[in-house]
Length: 126
Image (cartoon, rainbow, N blue to C red; front, side):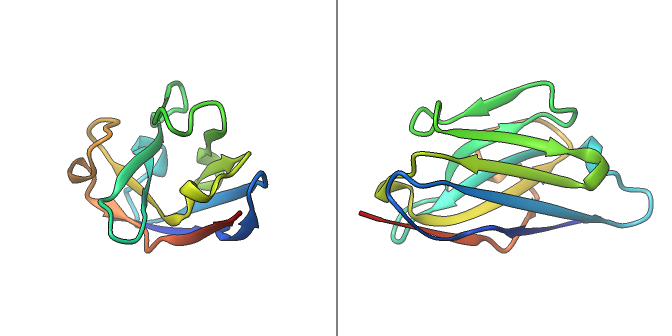
Protein backbone atom coordinates (compact mmCIF):
# COMPACT_ATOMS: atom_id res chain seq x y z
CA UNK A 1 0.00 0.00 0.00
CA UNK A 2 0.96 3.63 -0.45
CA UNK A 3 0.42 6.41 2.10
CA UNK A 4 0.60 10.10 1.27
CA UNK A 5 1.49 13.04 3.49
CA UNK A 6 1.22 16.63 2.29
CA UNK A 7 3.12 19.59 3.69
CA UNK A 8 4.06 23.13 2.78
CA UNK A 9 0.79 24.92 3.27
CA UNK A 10 0.52 28.17 5.15
CA UNK A 11 -0.65 31.77 5.06
CA UNK A 12 0.65 33.97 2.27
CA UNK A 13 -0.27 37.33 0.81
CA UNK A 14 -1.78 37.61 -2.63
CA UNK A 15 0.94 37.47 -5.26
CA UNK A 16 3.10 35.25 -3.11
CA UNK A 17 4.26 31.67 -3.62
CA UNK A 18 4.13 28.35 -1.82
CA UNK A 19 5.52 24.93 -2.63
CA UNK A 20 3.52 21.94 -1.51
CA UNK A 21 5.08 18.53 -1.10
CA UNK A 22 3.45 15.12 -1.14
CA UNK A 23 5.66 12.40 0.31
CA UNK A 24 4.72 8.79 -0.27
CA UNK A 25 5.45 5.90 2.04
CA UNK A 26 5.24 2.55 0.32
CA UNK A 27 4.88 -0.95 1.61
CA UNK A 28 7.10 -3.70 0.28
CA UNK A 29 6.24 -4.47 -3.30
CA UNK A 30 4.71 -1.08 -4.03
CA UNK A 31 6.48 1.64 -5.95
CA UNK A 32 5.53 5.30 -6.01
CA UNK A 33 6.86 5.49 -9.56
CA UNK A 34 3.92 3.36 -10.75
CA UNK A 35 1.27 5.80 -9.54
CA UNK A 36 -0.42 8.69 -11.24
CA UNK A 37 -0.56 11.67 -8.88
CA UNK A 38 -2.97 14.56 -8.76
CA UNK A 39 -3.54 17.58 -6.57
CA UNK A 40 -7.03 18.60 -5.53
CA UNK A 41 -8.32 21.39 -3.36
CA UNK A 42 -11.43 21.94 -1.35
CA UNK A 43 -12.54 25.35 -0.23
CA UNK A 44 -14.98 25.74 2.63
CA UNK A 45 -18.47 24.80 1.53
CA UNK A 46 -17.36 23.64 -1.91
CA UNK A 47 -16.69 20.33 -3.61
CA UNK A 48 -13.21 18.93 -4.02
CA UNK A 49 -11.76 20.27 -7.27
CA UNK A 50 -8.93 19.13 -9.52
CA UNK A 51 -5.89 21.41 -9.55
CA UNK A 52 -3.08 19.57 -11.37
CA UNK A 53 -1.84 16.11 -12.17
CA UNK A 54 1.27 14.32 -13.34
CA UNK A 55 1.79 10.95 -14.97
CA UNK A 56 3.62 8.19 -13.16
CA UNK A 57 6.86 8.91 -15.04
CA UNK A 58 6.48 12.68 -15.08
CA UNK A 59 6.07 12.60 -18.82
CA UNK A 60 2.79 14.46 -18.95
CA UNK A 61 0.96 16.98 -16.81
CA UNK A 62 -2.52 18.46 -16.66
CA UNK A 63 -3.81 21.66 -15.07
CA UNK A 64 -7.13 23.20 -14.25
CA UNK A 65 -7.72 26.35 -16.27
CA UNK A 66 -7.82 28.43 -13.12
CA UNK A 67 -4.20 27.62 -12.22
CA UNK A 68 -2.53 27.06 -15.58
CA UNK A 69 0.45 29.37 -15.95
CA UNK A 70 0.66 29.98 -12.20
CA UNK A 71 1.03 26.48 -10.75
CA UNK A 72 3.51 23.77 -11.71
CA UNK A 73 3.35 20.10 -10.79
CA UNK A 74 6.43 17.88 -10.67
CA UNK A 75 7.69 14.72 -9.05
CA UNK A 76 10.90 13.05 -7.96
CA UNK A 77 10.30 9.32 -7.94
CA UNK A 78 13.70 8.65 -6.38
CA UNK A 79 12.50 10.69 -3.38
CA UNK A 80 8.94 9.35 -3.47
CA UNK A 81 7.73 12.93 -3.61
CA UNK A 82 5.42 15.03 -5.74
CA UNK A 83 5.38 18.82 -5.66
CA UNK A 84 2.99 21.63 -6.44
CA UNK A 85 4.70 24.97 -6.96
CA UNK A 86 2.14 27.74 -6.63
CA UNK A 87 3.04 31.23 -7.80
CA UNK A 88 1.09 34.46 -8.02
CA UNK A 89 -1.40 33.17 -5.49
CA UNK A 90 -4.85 34.68 -5.28
CA UNK A 91 -7.34 34.72 -2.40
CA UNK A 92 -9.49 32.37 -4.47
CA UNK A 93 -6.73 29.76 -4.17
CA UNK A 94 -7.37 29.45 -0.44
CA UNK A 95 -8.37 25.86 0.30
CA UNK A 96 -7.33 22.58 1.82
CA UNK A 97 -4.99 20.96 -0.70
CA UNK A 98 -4.80 17.20 -1.11
CA UNK A 99 -2.58 14.94 -3.13
CA UNK A 100 -4.04 11.71 -4.45
CA UNK A 101 -2.73 8.69 -6.31
CA UNK A 102 -3.94 5.77 -8.35
CA UNK A 103 -2.54 3.03 -10.55
CA UNK A 104 -5.01 3.44 -13.35
CA UNK A 105 -5.18 6.79 -15.04
CA UNK A 106 -4.51 10.47 -14.58
CA UNK A 107 -7.98 11.84 -14.04
CA UNK A 108 -9.64 15.08 -12.99
CA UNK A 109 -12.29 13.14 -11.08
CA UNK A 110 -11.72 12.62 -7.34
CA UNK A 111 -13.57 9.28 -7.38
CA UNK A 112 -10.85 7.84 -9.63
CA UNK A 113 -8.32 8.05 -6.80
CA UNK A 114 -8.19 5.54 -3.99
CA UNK A 115 -5.21 6.94 -2.08
CA UNK A 116 -5.37 10.35 -0.40
CA UNK A 117 -3.30 12.38 1.96
CA UNK A 118 -4.74 14.29 4.92
CA UNK A 119 -4.42 17.70 3.26
CA UNK A 120 -2.50 20.89 3.91
CA UNK A 121 -4.18 24.26 4.34
CA UNK A 122 -3.36 27.18 2.07
CA UNK A 123 -4.68 30.62 2.96
CA UNK A 124 -4.08 33.60 0.71
CA UNK A 125 -4.80 37.02 2.16
CA UNK A 126 -5.63 40.09 0.10
